[in-house]
Length: 354
Image 1: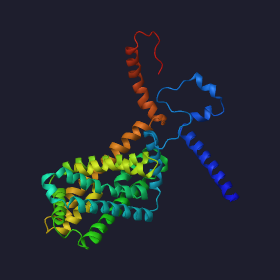
Image 2: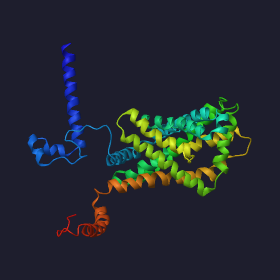
Image 3: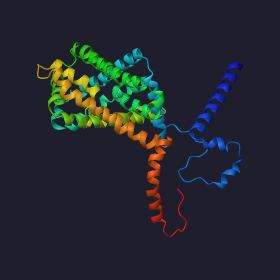
Image 4: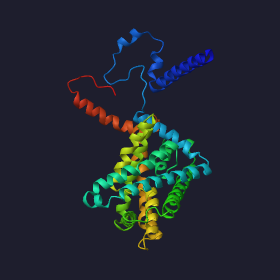
């Protein structure tokens, strides 16, 4: 019994030390104040909204999120190719599971589809979200997420990411994801006759036809920007959270939104369209799918993830610490800002310090 008490005390001490470490990481000001007495703080009253010295938080600030993404992106670039293939395959399978779940529920409501198609979209999309949760929690390699991760890593930690690793990560995850989606759609769904019966069969085929013939190249491209923009916001919201429930709740809404809206996600399409091709009587084929849908959707997904999320937030949050950007951007804007300050503070004789 004595030893367990000692162990407990040691564990408690470790926990307290961990909390102190975390808090110091979160709030570097702590180190400065640590050895001073309490009255020292009365000289500098806290601004409303400013963090207390001891502040344990269970989330990351926006800047911290993208610093974490840069670190994760470097790690992703260094994953050995065979691990990348397995993690990519599993991620593709999870997208397939989400898609199968979505068709099982959404495709089983033909009456509702007639009268209230919006409710069917909501049901379909809420089931589909499950795929991304599995990928996030198990640490899968999803191509569409890697468009953001690797971009932030290359921009923020340029010397740590080798260019061939950047390309390896995108290409292997893309084809491994495809293998996973085809495994689920072909072997676990089509060969087991899951959607042979109506109303599911015609629902599956209708999805495929809509994803190949409904729009033109530019429209699929644009819808794909929206899809991966939202998927990566889901990943961002998940990274912001420090516990599993919050990770899932955070990732749920953006995926629910993109799937309900009808935006185009290349890895999801690798599941839905081949399934439709197998169930259909020759109206769609793989060549048409690759050219009319998968190519524009893949390119649009890259723009959505790499530019609208990766580049945008890197630029906003992570360029401050880089002196070469300070010179270019901040000096250029400082004269404009000082002019505006001067205009706003004409009563004040003193020139405002920047």
